[in-house]
Length: 453
Figure 1 (cartoon, rainbow, N blue to C red):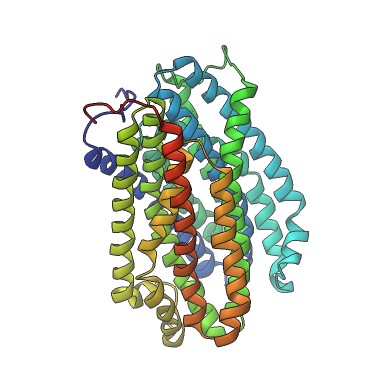
Figure 2 (cartoon, one colour):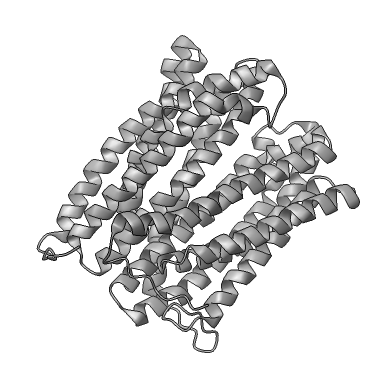
């Protein structure tokens, strides 16, 4: 089957963004479910210590993977812009340069993850009975980071062309392999955290190989050519400017969440466990909502390259409606049926009740995060990342830390803690929207508005 470049500069945006987003939603949902399966397998068949060891690495693993996801976002934006502008040579240079940049960063992160495993886990206060297993897991996990970097690079390029189906297929294959290997290593080979980590990196190299195979065999301007490899320092700077800023946002969120976790830890064990169970709902909703954000960034990038002023704003509005709608539907479902969802992770009524206390607040709040994240994606589509990152740091990170030590410290209730999300999202969204609209007007000033969108 031949996959041609998808023209995002004309046609019905409601249909195009929906068709573009649905495979991404499925991909992100599968990724969350596969991660949950890792936890379920090790918890059911390797014991609580193995489960605790794997769980102790979650924050650090999120830092590394989040940074690489951010780099993929930078690759996606720049590639989509040149595709929209029909600049084949710039597209070619971007793809080749991005492959080197992403692989290089993957190797650097691998070295950091391996060498800093013990000091970072110690700094996070990992329990003595869990730290050896956690170190082993993280050091094995480190060897999969170059593969993760290459998959995110390849997936970003394909997504920039409008192809979201093959990344879904590759992720499905790798995820299914991951589950099978989890069961084999843990049940048959009697391994624990190390078995889950080994299964993870094998599946990561599988997905990387599949996406690279497509790029190497492609005939379009985004093909990867080993014989005629070209590296552009100018493109590398632009990819890093967009990608590092996006990656740092993921890292900063993870750091801010450590303060929230410390506040949760001030309550009973049941509350801590309930919050952990409910956190799986956060991942579920956020990852599905992320699909329209990717669409927003990609469509805006292509139309920015094509100098289609009217369609840039239309893409922003359509993707915002979709992301808000997804957040609202999933959030309301969790408010009414969250108990059944939480029972997947625990049978304890007290823990479920504590988890529901979070879901009752977060359920109606999730949708409003769309105003912040979708606008952030729109600014990235215009090639802006530094100022949006600063706004995120102030509005959703610094603000949360201040909230924990003021509002939460004053009332010391779960309601006071969980309300910080909706307030921080609102504050950040206002800043992001002011910046995006001003940037849009400035960068498109003087462009002719096409008669048809």
